[in-house]
Length: 433
Image 1: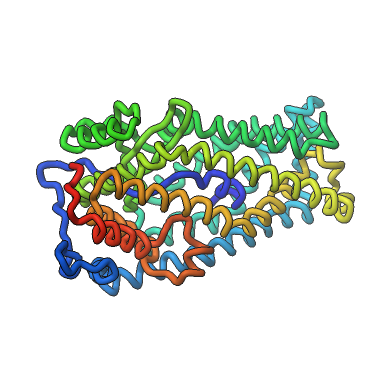
Image 2 (image 1 turned 30 degrees about the vertical axis):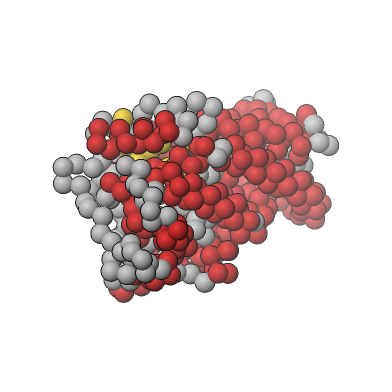
């Protein structure tokens, strides 16, 4: 990734499963032996039967990919920390600040000019790891469809957005720091939450379409059952969207994004020809669970608390850091834009330590949506199919501690077992389709 870990974690909100466009040749649901309904049905046996359908070589590849991601969490943090230390100790941050001050005397414009230089430096210095992680590694595991040029073009779009939108946020935050030197951490945390909410509002409508094409799903065989399910759950949905995610990746996914009127249920096109109608319905039940259970708003409350904690810790750590090294780095105080590498280093360290907490918050909501989806769609085997497709790049059967620390969604085994347990207890219920 091209940006510090704290930015990535800040936007780890509600992303999840799959999508499809069921055509005349839509895939059919296949229930393995051992998972067939009947008097002797057993949830544990059925779970093992589903897990056994993934060939050993594909399971080994998925495990290797996901376990490698554990190390990337560490390397991303260490690499980002090294960049911050390099910019500070080699006094590049000081030079960028001085360059901005030579161009203009206006503090706000100085801050933005520093941010432009900082963003470009961060982009260039993090590019080697980003190319490996986002391009070569994805191709090695067969998960990417992009050329290097296409991938790099998306990174440039991200850089442009960071310079413009990130610059506005940074200018506003430094203005708060300069005007409220004693309580900036409180007001800054509030401003950060406002920026997060603005991002969630404009993201689905204005930002996401810069990277992919979003269109209204017109296939009535898929759309109508989804909208009927939405009405049954009191959701005022009139459209379901599809996105051409296959332009970049082979990953299967769907998500609920936005809030306060910009909510969208989006299915990606990688599952158009892979997912059975039962799986689509199960996935949509999950996504509607996020809406009905108010997960976006609950997650905002969680992030308010986390941001308040981060800003309080940041104020304390900045005071200590600048008292010890500020003169050496040439930083004039907390209101000096040259302090940004220190801020990035500290926030990424705090976010790194909070990784299990953030993962647990998200994983808990995902499990709640899983149960809601099972109850509303009544498609446990479709849900198991979806979990197996996600198992192409997520480890299906981790240990309990491994799942607790590293998984921001329930593992495939947890999801399949939940579905089979529901099936065991509700075999007499008809399907909702």
